Image 1 (spheres, rainbow, N blue to C red):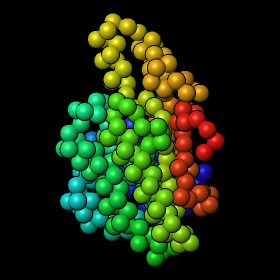
Image 2 (image 1 turned 135 degrees about the vertical axis):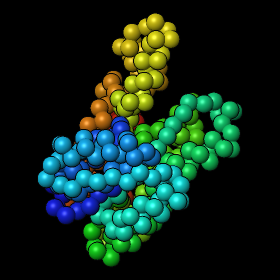
Image 3 (image 1 turned 90 degrees about the vertical axis):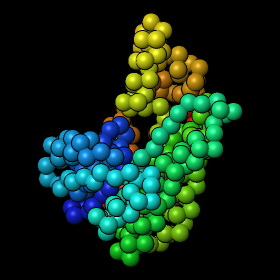
Length: 263
């Protein structure tokens, strides 16, 4: 895959996990990269890591909390124009529906949905005026199969899919594509830590816990394993590439086959 030299990309929440993997893949494809995270130390470390892998492009960073309007405005002030926007930042938590407070709902919606809504609003019209752009929302298979143990998370991911589809229609014919990417269970730092903690707490092997997860929580998985962050990053980089111009308004599943059916 290729991204033309001089294209500028921002991946939010790109100091770890899927965001960092996406930043690496997009930079390797040829785009100049802006790393984002909440702390300068984490941003600096990720910038160095991506620059090492992609020495031919420019890699810089901005420390800002994009879940807030102030954070989004700070990024827009520092970077007036973007060619590629990957709305990756997101949080999740396991909680019974009857324990999810109004504040929990608001927090998940602010981080997972409004962060991308704001940045797409700030950058989308500029992309349209230049007749080229890529906007990607990192959703989840949970946006199609709402998990009973974190319904508020699933709803936020469904909302991202709807925003991406609606914005793709708004920008139709402009040269700007808008898509959502739907990872399944992925071996991010948070997921690995959760499994290791469970192993320590119960005295069971990590492999046993992983197998149980797919047997009970994701029995429709065809891969029967966690995806790697690099696998997800490659999908994201493709939809940001020059060759993905005919892919827009799509919900692109890289979920290991968890979602059943042909859609």
